[in-house]
Image (tube, rainbow, N blue to C red; front, side):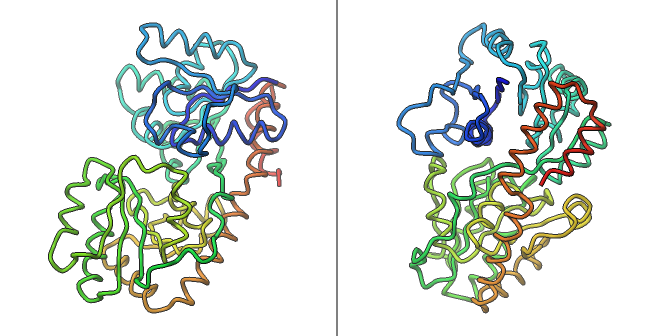
Length: 365
């Protein structure tokens, strides 16, 4: 069984392909040549050269679309993400479509050529895997009867809680979220932090210069009362440097609109750091059966109260962090996720129907 993992949003495809190969599956990865650093395996694993199982398509060539389809034809099954299910649909080979966020929430619901093609690709996929609870309403809206939930796979061992890396005496919060207020709600967190910083000198926030609303976020921080109380990291920060940063802080603040855990939230929990974010309780209880042990906050007042709570109680920080990693490894166990994907590929090649697949995949543990 030859598997092609097509697409590498934030190195999620790379992690899947690498993990499959670790399980003895003949898997290869197809990614865009000279893509942004955040999608580059070299920024994640500190590898000097690309392994031979990584293949590239060149977006500067006029024939790049045909190059992708031609490559896909060489494999038994395709695991395609973002917009690449469109190309998988034209390859003639069986494929699963893995939804990663904006692809299913926005693009597939637009009445554009690309949007209609992606919606068609979802409908014709042997299975549509959605990896975040916040995608569930879009699955329902698109009437995807071939959908199933498999949590996003990530390398949690990179984010093992480290010892002795906390050096600052200040209460430090890490906010590495893309500054896009409409989707992420960065302003909600930053205004709460500014309110906290005006009353406390021993607080600090670390954020990243990334996103279209970064300048607006910087205005919130650039006031006299917050001077010396924030650090801005460069947009091109390699993913491989993130574990040390997580280990050096007291808490992590992520997103306050989507209502779901993303990669940042998972990395924080894996690092045993208390996470402040907004999660939709109804969706989590429906899909997972319970809620992660985070500080669930949606408004500026919620976030401020959570910050005050963590600032004043270091034992609570440790307790929440420990429980967070335990919850994550129980519900997002990489070995179980791999078992589900391998079963899914084989079931599709064996031409099992989606109802049988859904029933059997729930029993994998």
